[in-house]
Length: 439
Image (cartoon, rainbow, N blue to C red):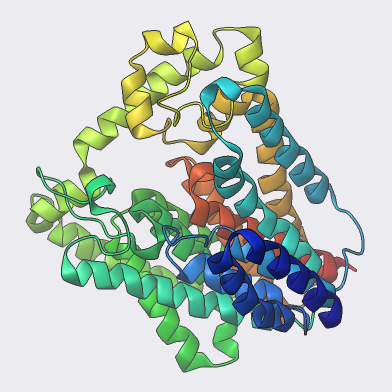
């Protein structure tokens, strides 16, 4: 397969060199990397994860690199043994999103934009289902932990400097000023995306603590600090829900100690509440009254928009209908302050976004994909031995998917490249591990 990869790459280099020498040179340098990705199971997926998580999404052509690495890695990977209902739901959801984009050319979302934001992140579910097995799972999780730690470090680096480094500062939504708090996003492109992605990565890699305890815990600590530093309430809620799911799935006998510690922390928090609640950090970073009122306005006007016609209710207004300022929108949309929607990019609720963009059919398909995967993880708990590494891995992966499902209530995650990339990867790995546990 390595010879086949070299032959294809050489052909591509020769063809490109005729018209674009610089691109041909870059492609030639990529040949050894692609051969390496095809050399052993899991390497291609691991390399794709490292690029997708640790490299800024704003870097040129990064959007194309992970699919190339992961697809090349399939030469050395096993194939999907059998389809699950979650696989069918994913396939139907991906096709429906593609159809939603294709039917609404008036929104002017070109093919590259659709591939970068729509398909490329979702493909990580496919790569995970085809590449992950007993031999590759640890390598994939360690790569994810390392990449997540690097990503978290970029968040903390921006926090230390007090300004945006890895994104366009002029267009960064969480840059602070005017009474708002600067919320770093690092290589993830935004504060909520950083918090939600790091939450999923942190939960999914909990089982690695048993491999190398100090190293894994140190990485986990860096990610946790970064999650707190983002001041993303969606990420915090997702983290809390994920921890609860992990705790429920793991047999732990010292619940009395846990309840005591939780009670003590709650008492300390209540005692310090009066001194902390009026601080600028708390008001601008946690309460954010203006942001909360905007979310309430979104929910108030979103439902009438989704039910104003049978077509909009069933199939929606089209992919990225609320992020296309140059596109043509229907009259009903223009009546309800379209500029507000265009600036915010959506209703800050991914389930409502799915209903508005892809209609009831799209919403049901998305929910089926996420929640059947979550259900498989919960049910596989019964087939794994208590206290085993497999149980801990299942608990972490299930908690990661649960955190994504919970955070989706508070943010438009399906248009966040890092969030969808990590979520699709989590679902793919979870379904594979859960299916293995039930065999």
